[in-house]
Amino acid sequence: MPSPVRTLKLPSGEAVAVLGQGTWKMGEDPRRRADEVAALKLGLDLGITLIDTAEMYASGGAEEVVAEAIAGRRDETFLVSKVLPSNASRAGVKRACEASLKRLSTDRIDLYLLHWPGSVPLSETVEAFETLKREGKIRHWGVSNFDTDEMEELVGLKGGGNVQTNQVLYNLSRRGPEFDLAPWCAERGIPLMAYSPVEQGALAHNARLEAVAARHNATAAQIALAWVMAQPGVIAIPKAGRQEHVRQNAAALDIKLTPEDFADLDRAFPPPTRKRGLEMI
Ligand code: NAP
Image (tube, rainbow, N blue to C red; front, top):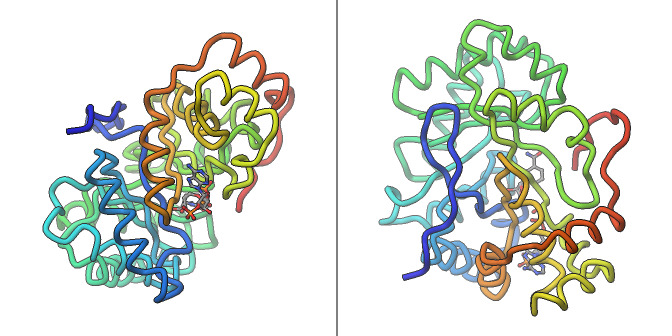
């Protein structure tokens, strides 16, 4: 058995793994499907039980890949999915959630996120999320791609304080959230879920990261991930369609970066010195 994956607490008090599995681009190519399912299953075997998906990915195809991977293992999985802003009305959220549940072959989503801010009043989306919670179709809800001012607006709404996470673009080459969004969330005990933690693979070929990696007998991608997971209150959700990558990502949990590593990484990827608008991929 692998050692248990480190966890952190959602505001609800529930513990979730600090390492999850992303699924963007899965379900797009039938020739890759078996590998994608095998990769997600291996992740579960290694204790990486949080799986992040969305109705948008492969127009629902990624949710179907997830369904295949978690078949018979629903109870050990913490399932995250997302509703598109264009579906964020009262009726739209209900419809979208039911369609996601069907594709995921399950009766509940553990954490349901608004994919990014849109034109439907936020209060209506929050109300719809709270209704889904009462109906047992979702257990928790959160948001994605919300900057600090949008989080402020959210928590000021009735029920808005029930937000469980903000999923944002965050990695060594995208440190903008550290300026005020991450501290704002940390103060309120709201974890950040870092998407594209290896910058869609780009950080896997970074020479400055390779120099640090050599000290740990690791890869550059593992150092990028270890760095994200070392940030307090942050969950990393790399996507890996190859089993070799899943194994490496799980092993990154055991990498302990030293003060020298952190200093070198700060020099190579300086933290922000002023507010920048939240970036999105
Ligand atoms: P990512 O996880 O930073 O990078 C994925 C790429 O890195 C894939 O090409 C993968 O290759 C490769 N990779 C993974 N582990 C590796 C390793 N150990 N060594 C070398 N390469 C490795 O990018 P992402 O997919 O954009 O982000 C992760 C997840 O976040 C998404 O899948 C999605 O679930 C979520 N996301 C959310 C939003 C949002 O708006 N909320 C936006 C973007 C992403 P293989 O697949 O070939 O293994």
